[in-house]
Image (cartoon, rainbow, N blue to C red; front, side, top):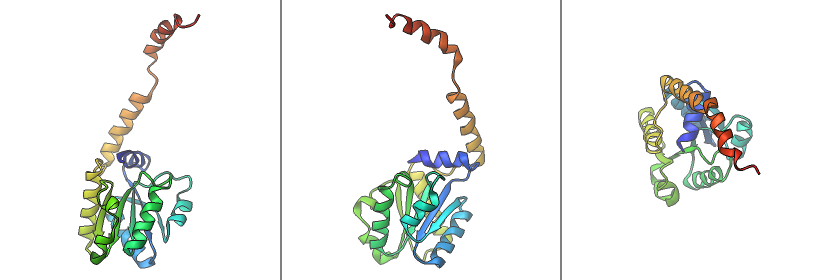
Length: 177
């Protein structure tokens, strides 16, 4: 699950991407603002997973998807996202009311790529929940300097190493018969 975080950070110049799914416009607006403050590029903010999928067409996988709502809605949306090729690798931050926390599916609560944040909390607790999620998933946040180093490594290691071509030709000569 760290791969989407690194891939998008490289694409966006060091900013990981995020999407928001919340039925209420007000909730979407607050969460978008807090994601921006936490260093995320909000690429979509929608009321449902189907509208998110449409909005993400051709844009890749969001690194983090924040899902806000009642426990049953959050469970259903989370399952839909895990079963979708666009969002199956995204980290999920589930925003639910404190009394709804026990109703979140155990499989989601035990998943290292999922964290739960209590609705009504502060921007600081939201940022903390995001940080815990990205660190627990193995990625942490990617700074612009990290993104540049990763891009240089990617270029260095993915560039064809022409010095091996003569050896490959010699090694395969005996196979042709």
